[in-house]
Length: 92
Image 1 (cartoon, rainbow, N blue to C red):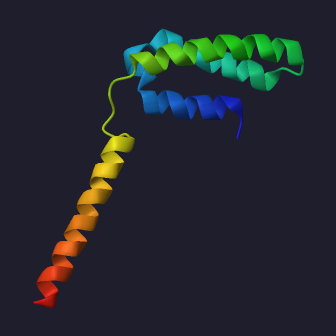
Image 2: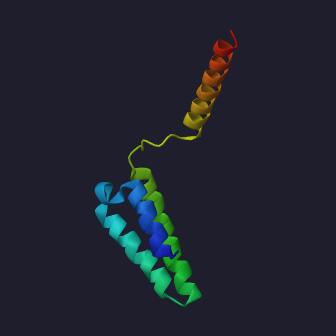
Image 3: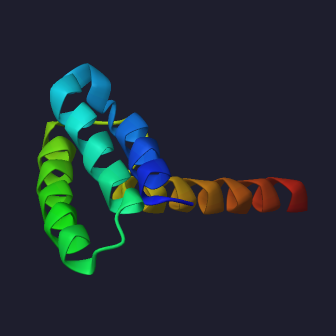
């Protein structure tokens, strides 16, 4: 998978076209430039700029519906508790 493909996927996950379409377009162009270049120094410079833009886009991203680690732990705990409740009621 190319850098451009990976950046496009992340931009989609971040809803970057909705929150900051201009920066998202620049990020796509920079990612394509990395893929199209054979010069290591040029890639490094562009990658640094891309990293900065992506960091800004991540900060601007709306809070997603996907949970974080705390939500995952809570969900797992609730699933374990439910299994225990079922075992207790089926054993009676």
